[in-house]
Length: 86
Image 1 (tube, rainbow, N blue to C red):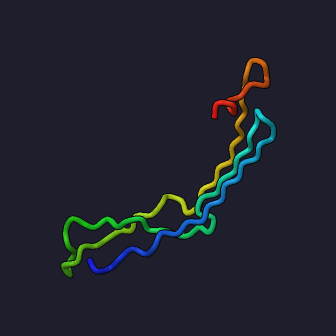
Image 2: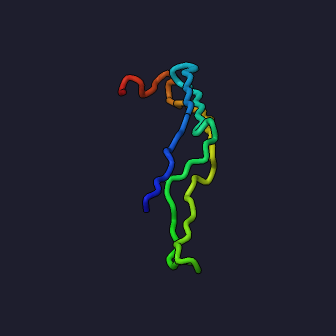
Image 3: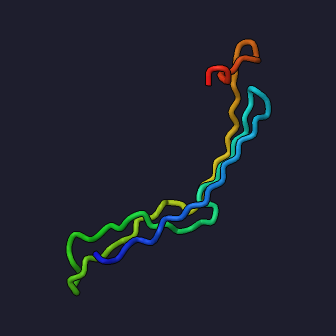
């Protein structure tokens, strides 16, 4: 129990571009450097032959993740949006 998990590092990039008041282009990359982070360990319920409880590192399912989105506000007069309500 004297060991510690290494520090969790994450470099992310997010970018949003307002095309006009109705359309937004959004781009996001999580963990840009693909660092293999360990968030926790799962230990065995019983010790092995040496009396040591084996452990398994719990890591994210993917090292990096990206998302591209296009958001378009649709209104009846083609000019209304929620910007005034923010």
